[in-house]
Amino acid sequence: MISTLSIKMFKSKGFVIAGVATLSAIAATNVATMGSAQAAPTTFRFSASDNNKTSIIKTLDGITLKMENFTPGPNTYADTDGLAILAPGFAPPQKLTSFTMTFDQPAKLIDDNIAYLQLIGGTTTTYLQNSLQSIQAYAATGLTLFANQFIAQANVPISVTSSDNGLNALAQINALTVEKQASVPSVPGPLPLAGAAAALSWSGRLRRRLSNSQAKAIPTIA
Image 1: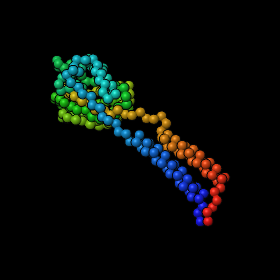
Image 2 (image 1 turned 120 degrees about the vertical axis):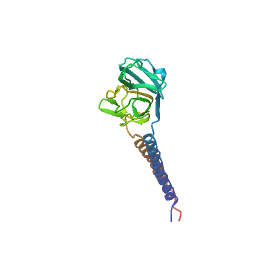
Image 3 (image 1 turned 30 degrees about the vertical axis):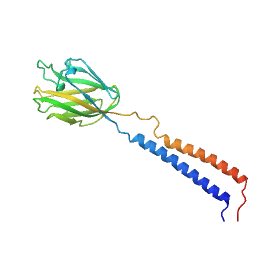
């Protein structure tokens, strides 16, 4: 025969177990959601408005890109085909073989779009930040993925240097795509611990209530 008290205790314990499982599941779901968030691409575009400048500053999607130190330059060359990353030194444009670019947020280099190529043969462009680098080889116009899609540090210049092997080439890009990187939490995975602690605290309160109920014994019904 099952007593009323036994039934109450069974249901209460089941409720505690379900509560612990539910809180743990919620915590796990929150962690998975945070960890699986995908970065959205940001595409900076270049046009004739970027011509004859000593520096270019563009802000889009919360990311600021600064391009400067155009060498020998010192000014940019840009037209409807975009910004020159390599120029032969005729008038125009003035000679250009390197510059720097900096992001104010950590950003992953994705691709660039070559809109114009002239006298290209063995032309390469190297993007270098500390020990990280991507060497691009341009043989035709169009979208080019970065060979090494490294994550650039914030506020650290990326050196961009091009070589045309003496062919007096002209190369222009009209788009540069990056992905802003989310900040990494300082304490990884706190939610499961918090959920478990809350569940144990709640379980303890219910056990104390059950103990009080046992002190007031309910007669067993035969």
